[in-house]
Length: 450
Image (tube, rainbow, N blue to C red):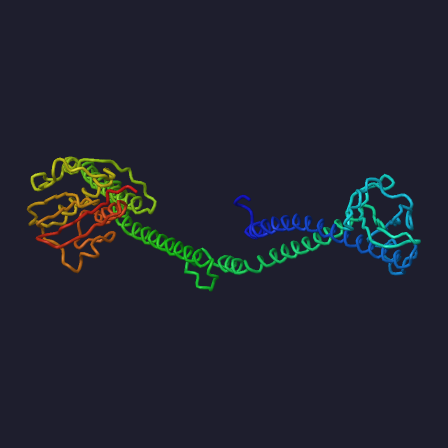
């Protein structure tokens, strides 16, 4: 069976396969039993007939058989019986003159002897007995032989097996029909569940509340979990699109106004000045767009990290050196030279840059220094960026990481901390903000790759 085989067919095969195996075993057992039964029935009939003939001959002193005995010899469902009786002196008393060929010698203890011989070229089964009696004044042992065609026993075996196979076939067919239609009835809750899901629209991702069998409760629970995840993703995307459109609207409108101002500039000098403003606005819009795309990429649930073993001190120094606008003298690094971590260096570097930029842009005029610390705690690495600026009220710390969240208007996009938080979560870590002298941002990432 392949993956496309229906559940109904699978269950029928699973149930009927062992049932068929049991039927085969039962049939073989019944074949042996039928052979044994046929032999026993035939031997008893032959023996009873031989005893009746011997008793009639001895009691009548000749060849007179009782009507009941003659009835045993008649051709019936169990076949015709042949017989003959010899007197003690070896003279035939009654019965068929020609005996079967190959009959074993009768024993002297008068015990019945069963045999397989040949009669007119055909195999026969028979029994011979010896009884004490007197015929025509001659006393001694009378020999009575009764036989019949061997095919009679075969027909009896065939009849018994036919009846057995008919019963087994009827039972198997009945079970197959019961299973086929029973499985259909048993799977009806799944069909009802499918119909209920099919009635939903693409906007309806609410949990499935209907009662289901215990065997499908796990599937429904998983499906509800998936609905919840998809719903949250769709809500986040809708929120992202709305926020992005709102944030891009003003820069785009500003660039349009500046472009019109350049077009209607009164002279060359004014045109150049306004063009420079337009370029600055375009760069700001491009930076905002890049930030939005980066946030969306690192926020995806299936983001792939390019993890490498890197030197944390070197990573911090590279980020400080890559920004010419940053005053390096105001930044202090407290990271051991030999500290190595496992991370995506590009993403972690961007998160570190965003934390430093946030301190520089929002630390206020009293900002005196920024301290960067880094150390390992078990399987985690903690990077702390702390400033001595104006700080953030406790009530605003929890919402400061939200997208486009700025306590005071500034030159930033309001996405720096959101991107840093998404990068931390992509590394199975966290970003937490605390109030100290200024603002203390703790970036914690997990170094385990599995």
